[in-house]
Length: 112
Image (cartoon, rainbow, N blue to C red; front, top):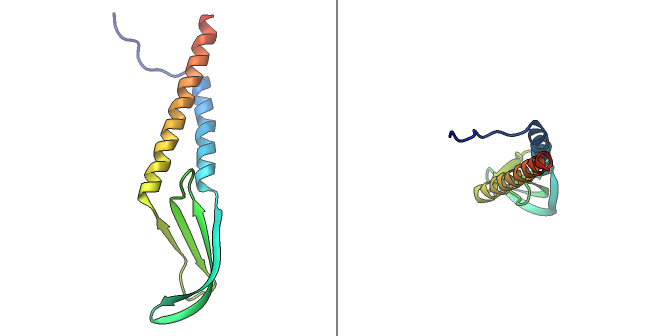
């Protein structure tokens, strides 16, 4: 007797789509981390700056975006790969759990 092939119900795919959209929103929204006044060296000169740091990522902040008040210093984004991998791992676990629960509820409803 052949094994049944892997399949998902349309309702599960729709629920997964909304869950993935929620995870994308959580990861791409800007969260203000800190702002401070400090001196920054750039091209051999020292500038007094108001620095704003914004973070991206959920549940770990995997990207930090620095914006300087001195326009001569370019803004920069710094990535933390271990936190990025952690965010991706959490997202996969959440999506697998959502998929498993949705399929279990669908099959439970069909059988009785």
